[in-house]
Image 1 (tube, chains in turn purple, orange):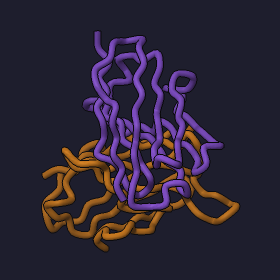
Image 2 (tube, rainbow over the protein chains, first blue to last red; image 1 turned 180 degrees about the horizontal axis):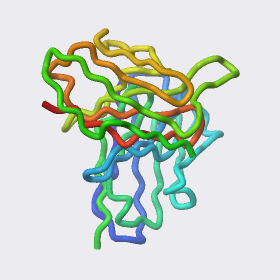
Image 3 (tube, rainbow over the protein chains, first blue to last red; image 1 turned 90 degrees about the horizontal axis):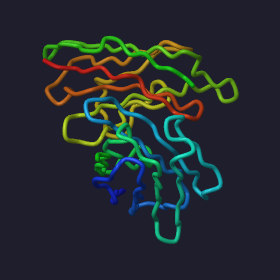
Length: 111
Length: 112
């Protein structure tokens, strides 16, 4: 199983960023995919999940209305669209298909 | 949302000695529909991705040594390490996945 996140970087407050998670080594279309983040010096925070077929999506209150999640099962990829970013969104973002985690991608929101 | 409170925040240990971490949930994590209790435990070592140790209260994940065990019921849970080894140092988290949004405890740092 391999999960590879990409799309992180430095972005100004109020702007948007899209993260990708490309999976391999398992039947991607059969499993839900989660995003979990860790802000600097803080603990783990569950962010969002998308069901195996994309029909169900759930979000943490802290990102509801600003983040969306989608998947392309033909490309074994999940996307996290992050809008109206604030400095509180600065974190390493992990893609998770339990029990496996990606290596994470760093998002820094700063002016 | 479910609030998970871990104690202690920091746990000094000596290799070879036992250790335990507590996790208390604001609501029961027992699912009466299937009889499972949906609490998991993770270890996050510095510079690595978190690793699943225990799932659904007391099941060890693949490859996890048997010195790790999970127990508890309802709202109170415990992760035990029978004999701490050098590779066990890091931050431990409990997580509930009974309902969305899933939530993590605040973490317990196990250190020498």
